[in-house]
Amino acid sequence: MSLRVRDLPSPNHDERPAGTPIDMLILHYTGMKTARQAIDRLRDPLARVSAHYVVDEDGAVLRLVPEEKRAWHAGVSYWRGHSELNGRSIGIEIVNPGHEWGYRDFPVLQLAAVCDVCLAVLSRNPIPARNVVAHSDVAPDRREDPGERFDWQSLAQNGVGLWPENAPDLATAGAAHDAAALPDVRTALADIGYRVAPEGAFDPALATALRAFQRHWRPEAITGEADAGTIARLLAVQRLVDERDQ
Image (cartoon, rainbow, N blue to C red; front, side, top):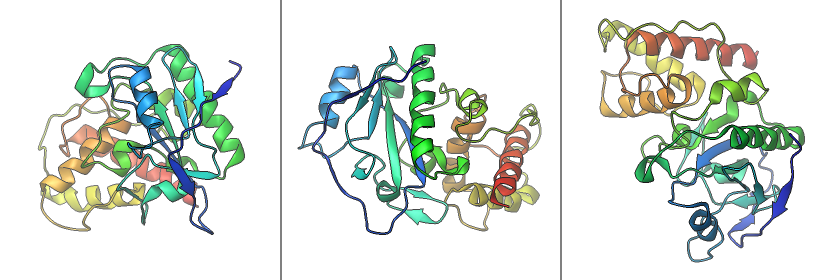
């Protein structure tokens, strides 16, 4: 599809930190009842939130903040050793009411437009595939967006982000928290990018990170458990990240 972008400037931005690369792309959903409400909020100076782009359900694309400026979309966040990610990322808001207001599937036209916006962003910025992430990936204790209904697999197949092909998808049978597997689970999550403690028994913080991983890479089961299927998918993503890092 031909990408058409309409400018609708938001005052909610500032300068990026000097010397900080733009090396992340963070996808969100708007999480409000209507697109109009979301866009108004993203342009309200009192709200102090924004994103670089908004993609509506009909595929319409708005640019609120120039890419060279810092939009205020990620909040308190962490990925691969970096925090406060607004300074190094581009944020895309995808219109969807979200889990609070009636979470629903993302229309085909919208997903196609999101893909086109992402490809355009990647053509202008050296963002590695491992750094195309969800808001829930970088702020798993606060956010769920864009959520398990978002089609990350198709996006990756079109050159945006990572998805392990032919990864095993095992049933959730067996021990949910195999103590022997927990060190590998923690290492894999950290290698992918999540902030997790390097060791310890299964705890709420680890469950939170696992739920974020599942929303992105194993949407069949958002349990927060280290079941066999989740571990298989987790190790497949870890291998893919390691391959891209070489």
